[in-house]
Length: 359
Image (cartoon, rainbow, N blue to C red; front, side):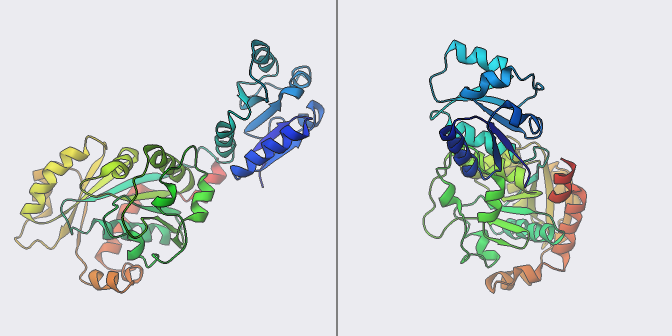
């Protein structure tokens, strides 16, 4: 296990307290009981916490100046505290117990490579029953099938649950209800381990019954952890997005607007596209056939003035497959599977493991 944080202190109580906070953040930290003991590992970890008792020792040890050093004290900070922090090469001062949450977040950040950021996409249907949830799920299955760590986020509390489409409704794991009042930074590895999943596809959906309101801070925390811990984040967003859907749109690199090749669906998509542009910069059109009246995909794209991400034909097998819990099997081949493969090729995603090594 990589060393994420070094704790420099000769105070056993302070050391135990900081190790407890590191454990809460699910990261590896070690204690050095003085500057000489800390010297060998001084530049290794992302985060170094220097106890107030060891600050003078560190300041006089002529250690290399480096970022990520925090002076930790159990007493109110005074001008002398900040002077000592500067001498010890610390950029921040943390006062216990007031700054425990801040330290947990700092530990969590130290344990995760900042270069490992996912691509986030949203899928929105121009009308009810357009098949946006099926497209989002199929895209997730295709990505996971390529070895990409993928998170499928259900942003529609009244959509029936994307976990149900995958047969994961009975699986134990975290749902939106469990994150509703979440505060502070969420550890990405912990999120991956606690969500229901099928292979490399993890799912965040809603529990059965009336949805609970999810705080804005909890939504931000979720998407922040998601982009740090996955290769691809896919959000199934309803036409009336609500707080969760709007946060997903604002986090998205690309939003796919699914429009059946129908006049009414195209007219509806015109107003919806304008609304989407207020929250997301890159909106791309996906046209689904067949066209009952002969409306072409080019005509839809021209009417909406949107760049096209492609066209696929509705798969008649899918409604039955969803009801019987066989969506994963049905998505292995067919027009939707081919379309999702093309989308993934365009996104040119790199698996998490390779990004982790590069970091």
